[in-house]
Image (tube, rainbow, N blue to C red):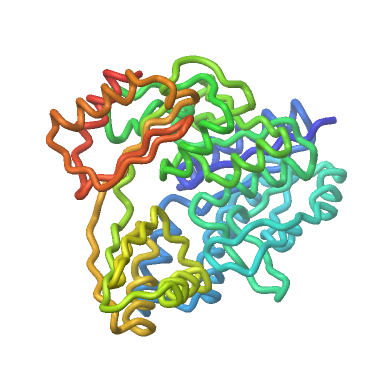
Length: 392
């Protein structure tokens, strides 16, 4: 009998009323399949609250201890859901990431799952129980708690599905699938019935919150079909698999949660540049869109997520006090769909809208499946509606 893996996001388990809705869905899957693994996120905005509490104590919290703190949110969710299911006479057991055998790299706040020992999960399934696993967390070789990055519960779910050879993994949230753009930013967004792993990975990489990027990578690698659905309706969701269908432009992502960083100093050498960049890597600051414009003097620029900015600023202040740094809030808009590069009409329409809107561009990246434009400031959501109407 095939095992079914269900993941419920923070909005789905936000309070006791919603937990009861989740329990009803689990009951249906349990009665139909018998072998059900459930992965849960922290309730509502719990993780945001825990981060805020940590930052009230330190602008750059100790990363090991921050993971210990953040992992507690999912543990509350799993225990509450297990208590509820058992009361409803649905046998259930809750497991933390390490109890579920999830082993990760040593990186804090962005760990990668290296292996899953599913023996405990399988034992509980064989005993007829619903297994509820705390998402977003695991344990490293030092027996320390690690977390997988925001949205990491998706990756927990798909990784477990892959390890158990489950053919499908359901990702439940408060939206009924993947949309052509963020419906919270514009009303013209339309639901997509199906999308390829490649397109979905580009959408996730560009900052959309629909799915964690690594869960899509795992789904593609192991052939796990991912189905994104709403917890609160029975509408068909979006299927993510290896099929490429439909129009060229599938999605438009606008990401405002990035900082543009410009660093300069007198004097330049390749050794100096490499030392700075290697220091970023050693401190797990995965900067993107790096441009080295240095000649006689050091001149580099890059982007970094806003949630990593305090860590970067602290590093520059303490490790490189001689560097001059400027920071600005910017927007990056990415137009995603297979075959985009071969269609000049898409690029022409995009550039006309940008020009007519008098938007100032920092850089543009074009490949087979994506046009990504970075602007010098945060741009209005109105640009999404204009691009959507012309391109989708």
